[in-house]
Length: 322
Image (cartoon, rainbow, N blue to C red):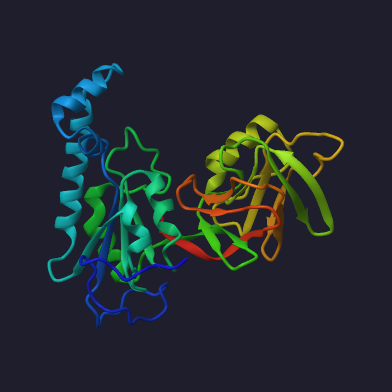
């Protein structure tokens, strides 16, 4: 995935040892704070004024004051995090929508302030940098990937710099097309039709191969086993055991495979170990897509004759434990 040079908020040059090592004491640490626009900010962007935003919400039995209160809580948490960064350290802030244009340095300390999905959004642009997830609203966010309170930011940063951080390497999934284009994801990769209607393809694993028509398929990591994959697994009551977040295995599920004279339903779920790949060859003339972690806007086209290999990614998310 290609990225252009960073915006003006970017500072410094990337000269560093392995990203899994603590930041060098001879170089000033840099903290990159990752956020996304709050619901309040999105409403004002869309409707221009508070009055128009309030009118819009009233039609849906919602109240702007509630949305604004959540925005204020987030802003207070973010201010506390910024104040916790030592004054002599370098810092940068990047919005979720700008991640594909931001250049991370190997020694960055990445701090995600928001919901769990924000960590997944950032993960595919990282290369082993330590990630600290801070939960500004525990009543609304599960905190699986953002387990820490914002008030702990200062202590957590100091722990990382001192080399005492307890981190876990969370497995990621990679989908690579036959022309070299690839997508990384922390939760899962989806292969199918853009509208989630019937997708036609040939799926293969080892010496097994089958032509299928389905609602698409997903290949999930252990982190993704708490989301979309879990829903499919519970409904199906299959024998596949979902992997744990650090397991170097993936689980795949075909959604609503259709049995017909031309398509089968025998290769619809299973596990992929490290070194194994699930192959899929498209038989869709239009609207075939591949995307990761539910971000449909960041997708690869998957049209007739194209082949994708989905496997355990060589890189992992280096997440600070809760």
